[in-house]
Length: 317
Image (cartoon, rainbow, N blue to C red):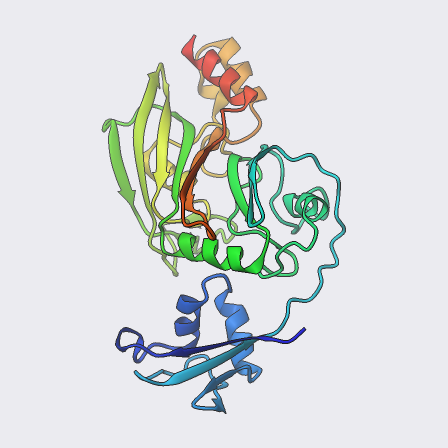
C-alpha cells in the first residue's frame, strides 16, 4: 500500500509557527509526537527538501509535502464482546458504552476492550487512529458510561476528528455530585494538565496547562447531592472530574478526585448504597455531530443505566 501524500501551503496565520505545530493543526487525528517522528524521518518536505527539525519555523507561502506511511496491521485479535449499538452506517458506529469497559488496550487492559469488540464487529476497521486504536475518535473513562462514536473508514475518521478538534461536537453529560452549587448554572474556565507532583492525576497545578472550559446546570437538587447537566466545551483528559472537584462538588464515586466519601453520609442505608456504587456517577448522555458523508447534523442519546437510576432513587429518598 502506497503512502498517503498531502500538500499544503502555509497561510499568513500560520507563518512563523513551528513545523510540528503546523502539522498538528492541519492533521488533528495524529499526535504531535507521531508527526515529529515523520519530520525527523524525512517524510516531510518543504520546497522539495526534507525538513528534519520539528522546531523549524515555517514562512507564509511555503509548500509543505507530507507522506503518511500506510497503517501497520494491528496485532490485536477481534473478540466477540457484546455492543449496545445506537446507530450504524457505512461510515460510523455509535455505541452506548457500559461502565467498566476500557476503550482501547493499555496497561492492565490487554483484552475485552471496545477496540477488540469493534475489530470483531467491523471488518477492515479504520487504522488511522493508530495500530492500537483503530477507529477510535474519542474516548470515555473506563468508569464512565454513555454515547461514543467510532469511525469505520479513514475519511470518516479524519472528518470526525476534525470536528472534535474544532469543538463543533456537542456533548452532554449527567453527573451526580456531592452538595449543591451556590450558582445553579455556571461555567468553569480553568486550564488543566498533568499534576506537577502526582503525574497520574490531572490538575490545575500543572507545568503544562491546556485550556479547559466546562458549563454546568443543576438539573435536580437533592438533600446533600445534586444531579448536574454538564456540557464540556473542550475535551481534556479528566476535564469534568477535575473541574467539578475545583467547583467544590466532586462526582460521587470518584476515588481519584475526592468523590469516594461515602462514610460522610448521615444515613446508614445511604452509606451502604454509596459504598456499593463502585464507579463514577458520570454518564455521557448525548452526542451531536455532523455526519462526515451526508453533512446532516445528528444527535444520539443513551438512557441512564440501571445502576445510575438506582443511585438517584436512593438519593431522592
